[in-house]
Length: 262
Length: 276
Image (cartoon, rainbow over all chains, first blue to last red):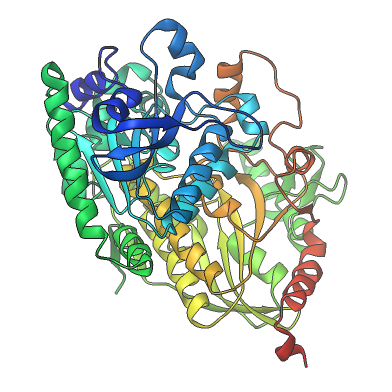
């Protein structure tokens, strides 16, 4: 598949959304609402549940499954109150020593006037900075589209996974094409040159691994993810809170491709 | 053969001092005069954009600046159309190696680490080198227990470096947090324009957020917001004054008052033992 075909697959309307992974991977979940500041953003679903016999906090961007829920969830474009809810739940997880598992699927943070008024940039900035500092294990899985800062706000993790047809990009290929070639139709070329596929992420070290998709047997696929998460958490729970922070710092510290001047 | 008119124009251009028109009131001033006024329009007070070296000269104590984190070179690792050329042109136009200048300096007699973004260099978009330089500056400041003063001005992440540029946001944020955890002060001065991934990371992570009057500060671009909202936005949308009104910055300080304000803030945050 080309990068553009993967982009289309990642945005596919029949692809499982964030809430489906929460239901498929965890059991006896309790959803927790609201940012305690302004409101409750349905684009981000968060709460506490069980990963087999282990309590975890989950935070998932959810696009919705039909037209009503998609509108209610703003098509998976979170507003500042969504990121603030996510951060509230992360800090709560830290207090109680629970790992944080995030599911990322957004074309990007919402770009409306209300989001700007309520500090979209500040909300994302705070989420990234605090996430980098959490004293509990954090794992993020990009399940569909990882759209720029709005995705990174829930992906500043110790380990990051990509589903096989998920994409992750600094800018939407459409946005890139219209800036670069003044032609949004050149989206296929933009998708290629931006390097957005799961394999690209693995090659660049942006993701630890790629998870195979099998939506025809979703329960088995979720069982596989459950095993991956349990395995990772078993390793990370050997680490002290300080080691977890340092591990995350070093994970991101190495990013950058540049030369030295003579 | 050149015409007489074109020759006259050439001579005129050679003897008339270069003028710059204010982007707000359109009044024209000799470049020299504007530079002396730190690029603040003498007619209307508009804070025009300023290059990094002029900013440093206007802000830090004379002769106190030592440049740090130099010697890095951006690479066109995705063979992105036009990127290599853009880098060359930006370097020639600004005389800088990249879009941020870092160093150690004194302001009002107080030691600090400083970074200044230069919007003349590919809109000071953040690629690997910008992210690395700012990260190294924060690490240096943490090691030496120095406050950081950061002047932000940027179009956001640098798309020519793809996902690697996005990762810079988390890298710098991690370094800011370690600096903060050690009890150090970080002040950001938001300059025109501060947008995108820079707003969504280290620009908004200061202990104290100051903006220059009229600076454009936002996450999404105004045109994108207008298309999304499908309505006309107020004139002051995403301006410093708008952010102050909505509670997202601490203060608006005029450029020529910044050295005194920053010097005072640095003194206010000195450890009591150091003051005694």
